[in-house]
Image 1: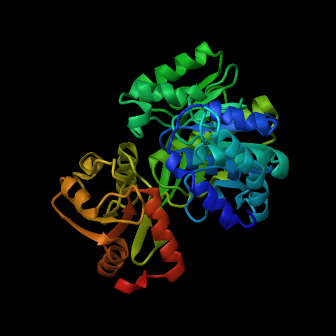
Image 2: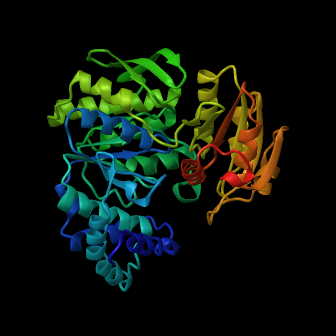
Image 3: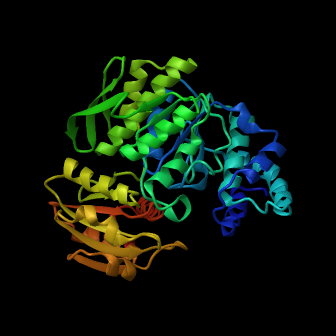
Amino acid sequence: MQTADEVIEWIHSLLPFGIKPGLKRMEWLLQRLDHPERELAVVHIGGTNGKGSTVSFMRHVLEKAQYKVGTFTSPYLECFEERVSVNGQPIAGGDLVTCANKLRPLVDELAETELGSPTEFEVITALAFDYFARIAKPDLVLLEVGLGGRLDSTNVVTPLLSIITSIGYDHMHILGDSLADITYEKAGIIKNGRPVISGVSQPEAQAIIKRTAEERQSEYEQLGSTFTQDLLSVKEEEQSFLFQRKNGKSLQVTIQMAGAHQRSNAAVALAALQKLHEQFDYSISEQALKEGLAQAKWNGRFERLSDHPLVIVDGAHNKEGFESLAETLKQHYPQKRYKLLLAATKEKDMKSLLTPFAGLDAAFTFTSFDFFRAAAAKALYEQAEVTAKRYDEKWQRAVADEVRQLEADELLLICGSLYFVSAVRAAWKETGFPAGEGSL
């Protein structure tokens, strides 16, 4: 392989191998690569929602503190390479080619063993470890769990500390139907003697995380218990809050990300950063904390594409995400009428997802997009138990129509899938303001 495009095509060719929970294939690959993961200082970040935002908050603060920060995140919004980044800069094409050519013969060899071929995500994870350890050499890697935790391909590291941002009902066909089952899988990233920071809200889930931490002799910090966040003010998407950690000095901070869930993510990030400072000698000043949090953004999360008319995209795609989305709209735009344009993957239940919007002044348009797991617009329309609804299978036309018809007192929210939001953002950036049906 000589180009980044060839590498990406090869990696995507592994998609048919699907999701295969388990660590044996990763351990095999990493042994053959001489264990790059052991050369890295890592913060391991799991949870149903909030992983990417927490990574962004931490990265911006650590950069302000003059650290070189690697990030491993998914899915991507603009380009594949952004999944493996250093200080926000995606892996360069040449480095991607170098790492992939080292990995490909190992992948082919592994496929011939009884373990079978590694999955797409396992290959990307192994490539990221090799790149960070042997080429980029960051001071710290913020490593986002792909799915679950216990059997996720990232769970081969011994991190400085672990973070569990939230627990919700997502990927239940893999992680289990109950909150307890899902929490057990997420808590699998807690390592012996390494601290864990939790933003989880449900008492049942908190109890499981606490018990796991005690079994592994891991210090446990919990939002709402050992540290808190209290809203001070709101201005459009900007919000200020007071962060207080037990036996610590209170800190007043401002963030650009909207919603109570983002205050929680920022508070979890703050607790983790203070732990890095106290136990692992990372030099992080109060000024770096404040400036980094104030500048942090995470594309595709309540992101404004346009002010006039007001168009926002959000990657909410599960029950808890839609609950946060409804609360965020009420908190930041209480005077607006809401128009929602939604697309989703086939396993989603639109009846359940839209429950938080039942009491709001909202109209719904359902659409579909070019993705192998995308649901048909008509199927979503028929699922949804709302009165003001319509559907259009062609998302480009649906976006253009909704934007063109938007009144001054209305807000258009495009949501339902990060893959869908990625497609909308790319088209918007390429063509600018959509004036009509053919403009996207």
